[in-house]
Length: 555
Image (cartoon, rainbow, N blue to C red; front, side, top):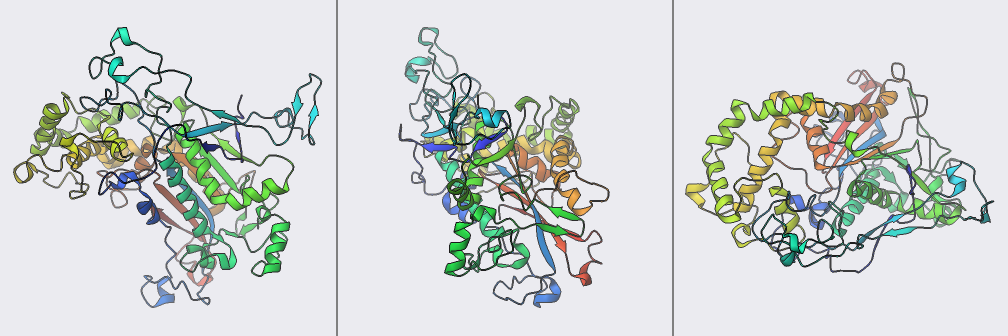
């Protein structure tokens, strides 16, 4: 069995060169933003905090990054991060996952092999019964208990696969004489499994968070947000004894000897203490890590935390005589609330159907010349009577992994971009069959997302209510401890690892000025909610609670 609520800090993933999964973006001249290429990920650095309009003479537009005398009217006390998992394999197999004629017959698009492995670590008896055991020993049954725990490498290669050309006689029907016991994706990948590309994307997210909120003396570049004292959620130059001498060589050595992972300083606000200075910075209550029980979300969160706390995790492993553990909170996927879940709230189905049955949607979906043309193209060129719910995923998982698109949709150049419902997108007369990749994608996005924004976002607001409750339960004890007391200190950082269908409805609940429902959340997208304590008494009249917040999305 695996530990249900904890993961070993030794790498939870590892790469073995079993097949040529690939990790480059070389096949196409340009990629959709959805793919989150390395260049795109670099542009998502967390922006520095703007100066107060009274401080910079630029109406708040300046950042004054190099001014050591900037006014410290606020200080960062909490961050909530919500992420979409990184790049993955298709979320379903045939026959439900419909793309185009030949998709499942092709060895390139119909067979998915993965190099990225998952490690599992069973808890020792000492951890299981809550008693720490020193070194190695045998229990009464002769079972060796040893620290650190050993790992199992999980490989999806037990089920063998017959050629996809033999396996299927037509696009969506399996020929009985070729029935096999192969995996859904006909190779060594799980459905929806995180890919090496996704691994790198979440490492990049971890790096961005570290550069924004971790101050490490002269190791923190001027352009990083954490160079601003107001943005230092963690100051690594101060350990829990208050030493601040680590900017010189002697201080660096002292910090190394005393474990950088102990660099936890209590954050005390007017309403109480946040985090626990007796714990390592990656342990609760300093960090709360939440994900649903899917491989891609579990691993994406782990990789982000590895990128975020890498030096501290290594230091802890080198200095401690037991495995380093980060606690993960999850639950049954069928009951979880990280995406809209009608199984726990039937009213959601009604709201969704009200949106699709509305005059607004029907006018667009049934009479728009562009929609009519896209449907005609999909039927004649892709061999589909209807545009399936998998179509957007078919396009993106193909182009984002450098697989070959059919000639008739191999025309992506980014010319169109997202299009709103209010824009007349009749491309037919002007372009004929041009830009069909984007036109099909735009149709799929708008059709899927329409309920999120309909009726003032009622569907999204009801569906995301339970998740918002989780989010604010970490924040209310900070900003209003009198009315929302907590038996344990609230976390300094909370990480929620979910899906595109987590981030998009969350953004929709904030209104159309924050997010347009005709856009899609790319791989490894990230929403950040920062809570800043207002410590300048001259400004507290603007913030009666004594706190302010900042929300960012993909930088």
